[in-house]
View 1 (tube, rainbow, N blue to C red):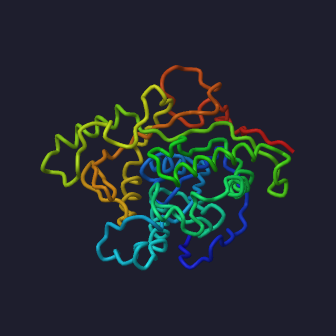
View 2 (tube, helix red, strand yellow; view 1 turned 180 degrees about the vertical axis):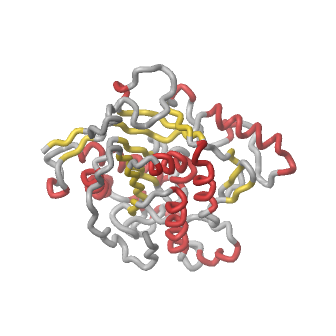
View 3 (cartoon, rainbow, N blue to C red; view 1 turned 60 degrees about the horizontal axis):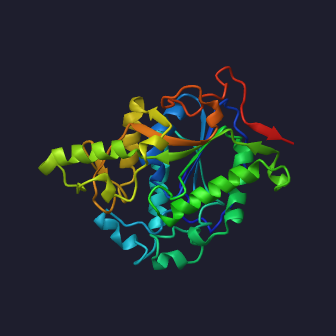
Length: 324
């Protein structure tokens, strides 16, 4: 994929051929860099194992703060040209993860980064927060029916930490999963397809707390801020809700390289990273999820290790439900 930083709003994606890989994974994220932080190792692992991994990004992150001083003039409150840089960063990150199928929801430029909740950016033209959910979901339905994923990954109802674009990504992804399975909806997008398993990304509070402890122990060796407790953070999933732990240790290098591909958004130190708020977070090779559809496939009480567990596709038989 090559970066097209001059695409018109909603520029159509080029025609694609439905994938033939037995396992197919679809991830819906809000901005470039979100996919790496919470799901990068998972994406790299499945891509390396031959699964078809598709990333749909809802906006180009136009409202993001800029951590590179030399690029500060590109920020939304100045030249408003950050999107072009973030698209290139995304391309480089996907190369690091080995993921070749990436697209923007509705085409690049269709939806704009909405900024943080309650800010003027929420009201800008094309802000994703203001998008009609069914209209936006329709764009994703087209992808679902083309890819026919057995597994969908997105955020929880709060978008993980309350960002409007994350909340909207959750709404759009969940609605698209519902509409894609309805034969009466947009038959021109292809036969209906029911996604067998849906996951929400998760950050177990116990894991976050351990990261805070490690950052405090690092003391003067870290330039990042350590909060007092997990309760001081806007994110964190109750451990009881976490169903799945994916061990991406073998792909730590890929994830780290992909995070380094986002210099405007992510600052990194040995073992830690931070966004524009400078709050240090532990670099994680294990990534966590909450299974919200497909629970009937679970046969063991302990945490799942494979997002495709219980689907019976190890022998090459496709899963999911196609309805004509």
